[in-house]
Image (cartoon, rainbow, N blue to C red):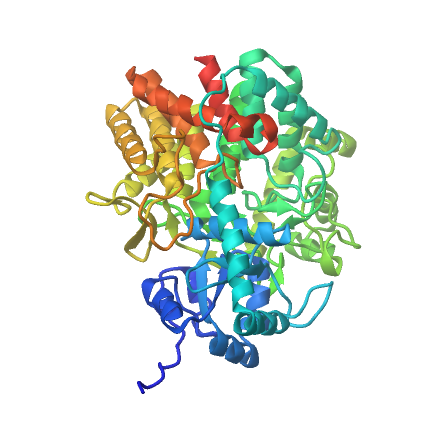
Length: 608
């Protein structure tokens, strides 16, 4: 008899992902998603426990502390499963596939994502965060592990039937498009405006209730509609939302930039992580609002956001890092919140501290845990200045001085963990943000940042043989790029061309768009797959048009192709864009609130 295989050891120490490295010392024998781990599961007919998360995710860290650092839990997991840990930002394809499965099985999704796979990678059970003890109607993680291990051992046929059903459902949904026969007219745009009007929160901005995510692409769609049609309601919805976010706790009122989302309907208490892509998208929305309305306040928000990106997220090579965590030393938001006592100590002047507390809504009771307050601006600055009997200019001067003092104190606190990898798609959004703002605000520093990040993407992240690569850290670039990487980069290079009129940028955009077509286009159904053909570690090849936190790759591809058609006169680019829009026509008509990116492309098509 051959000897039994050696127990698996934790192999994450060799990863470049900051998220995976955070788990390199866990007693769980984590494996990266690679052929060695997948082959082991196949060879031993062992189920896979797949955990997908990201470094800025608060509940990912909670589950790690409660379960993945627990020796007893780890021992059971190691004995009965091949445990694989994935950074969703490095492998968005795996995240999208298995999130689709978890949502189909449970009706909800989120991170950390916890999904159980057969050795041939088919999902049969899943969820998100499981606590270490049963609570809030959820079983303990150890209970879930034992139940799944028992089912796999004793009811294998049932497990495999479930896995086959879920996988077939994913494959059917991945291929569901319209077939390219729909007419492209303004109907979906009018329907979307009406639907957004019904969902609009007229009192607080944004759409529907809590939680509230920053709807940057939807705001841009409303601004584009106003430009094309003069629809005053569209401009009102966009402006009200931008104003509310700018004054809310979702915005870092001291350091600039925006947190991930607000847990309430008032934009007050955020989930405190800061993501590069959110801030890049919002900077464009505020810059375009400044361009459309001439309102200086929107330009200031764009500047504050981009200055934060340059100050805190810049990589020495020219790109930008991914994210700042939500927590410090295990406590969410501790870096950002204040008490009146802390503000008085920082400013040293009781009257000035009282003014600053009134301005930023800091009270003895607090609006956050432990009597602390998230800084926000409950009264518009102009109205506050009038109420306090001072000019807006005098108020700005005093608040700016207070910001400087408070930032100096905040800098002494333990900072949130930074994920310092560089991603092609997120960095392309940053290039676009700096290019658009550089043009609209006529700011040389933003022009330079856009140029530098664009060169970085076409330098260390471009391989002559393999094309664009998705991720870079510590001098190493890896992972063949996805649709979003190519589509966002093509669009960003066109923004650079608009900024500089440099024909080299147009040539680069064409090169990237042509490579995108070669790797991802669906010649039969129109549009683009999210992954290239031939990936043996994927159970399905997704093709989607709806937006997630960022506009869909198909939407941005269509936008870029339409711009290329206008600039080059080549009809093949327009044909590909039209085919993509027709492929996702029902997405635009049935769920317009999830298709702002596609509708922006349709706005551009009709405006030509």
